[in-house]
Image (cartoon, rainbow, N blue to C red):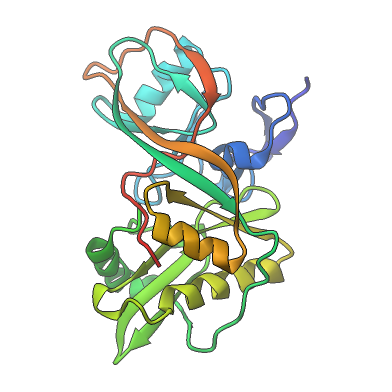
Length: 269
């Protein structure tokens, strides 16, 4: 098939491989880096990644060959970790799996969202507090420039940031809700629920649909998301492989659908 043209990281457009029957939610990292986040993309051959201080995600093409694995190793660096997304690629000899966590992908076609006047927009000046909250709650990757991926909102009590949520991946027509977390001392008050609905309302205002990912073991969060109207789209794996010390690759094949490599379990709202 003829691959559609997407914006390239350096501007203009570039033809990069898209699997037959490709759905943006099957590989939302690649769909984001070829679309709304193309201005952030770092590219080597057919391999794409976010800057290291924005997100750990790296995207392999749907049919990776030896040259693609070599490019991934060059982008990640010797001993670096590569979260695998889309169709799960079996890495060459010398690479090792460092993480494999079962997960789920939920979509919010039925979620209208609800604007919340108590949810404040978070910006660059709030990043130190956001990083501190993430360190205490472990919702998943959030780095010094993750804020650039989308809008983030939070709730402050007594001036302190006690809960937050925001936007991460942005495949065409969709926006992922991520970094949902609440300070342990303020849980059970519905703060994360309010923020998920507030972020969803902003997504809906743009004519898009919210979606999210969660660890399959985080049943409390999944039940809550389902009560809000999210529905299971597919199961997945949060899988990460490590580049060999010398960064060499010898070929690979693919097996089945895969998932986002998320280093840490999502926090229950």
